[in-house]
Image (cartoon, rainbow, N blue to C red):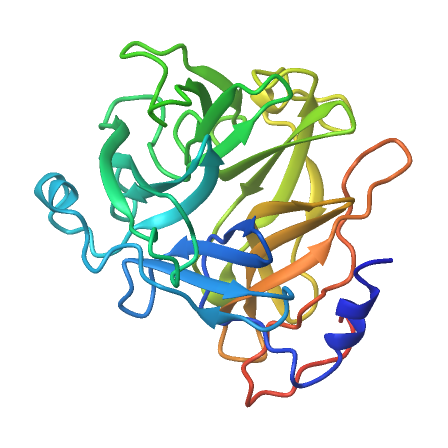
Amino acid sequence: MKHLAWILCSLSALCIAATDVHDPHIIKDKDTYYIFSTGRMRRVVSVIESKDLLTWTRSADVFTAVPDWVKKEIPACRELWASDAHKIGDRFCLYYSASTFGSQRSFIGLATSKTLDPNSPDFKWVDEGMVIESNPGMDFNAIDAGVLTDADGRVWLTWGSFWGGIKLAELNPKTGKLLSDTPTIHSIARRTPPETAIEGAYLIYRHGFYYLFVSFDACCRGINSTYKIMVGRAKSPTGPYIDREGRPMAEGGGSLVLQTEGRWIGPGHNSVLCDGDDDFLVYHTYDAQNRGRPVLQIRPIEWTTDHWPAAGPILAPPADPNTPTPATNP
């Protein structure tokens, strides 16, 4: 298979994946892969790039500072979270989240660029401002944006973290923002109360189904994280999404894709790379053998005969270059 060479390469110490990555959203433009993720290491939005999905380097910044309109609304915001890049028409749209931990006062904003290539004269990110907001008392939290172009060419935005779960609304492909000032908001997944921990939604279209990936349970606690990746599928972007056991995701359902394995703790907040005939699960996890550091992992998706996604072997061991990495899964 195409990814066999990548698996073999991953056994080499030269195949070093990125460390300190949270909430990775991947996109391919021409011959280069880009991952946009939560700002870390004093970066407002973290961006890395690769030619082979194995060796990653830092790419150009989207912002040098949190946008002024965000700072005015949320003065304590220090970085932007969970940024998803999606090509809509002839430009790239980057949907970013602005909030503070545990708060429902949140925004999803939009930045656009004609290209992702920092060496192009057309490379320039322009902030387009707010897409959607949330306030205390609402049934959703406006973070963790994900974008889908459906089989008919319509564009959809998913978002949500805790509270009322995962929401979906249609976007205007000309503006990249919501289709109207009073959009129809669909509730497509939630946990069964009193449990509310669901976030990081990501949609793809494969095999005649729309697959909704989400993360359950606790993120961002290092080796104490309990994150796991779950999935359901539907015939329409608006649902209903049903898991492998027939349970609606709107009623707490979800089938397990990946959870803690050995040294790799709390995998979650995934995106999916659909690259020709190959699909890849892209997510962060915590390394129990390296002080619980957050790292990037990529695995091929191995589809079952009845078209459910399963996580294959790790392609790129997400190790610090100075830390020995096992050649195979634990």
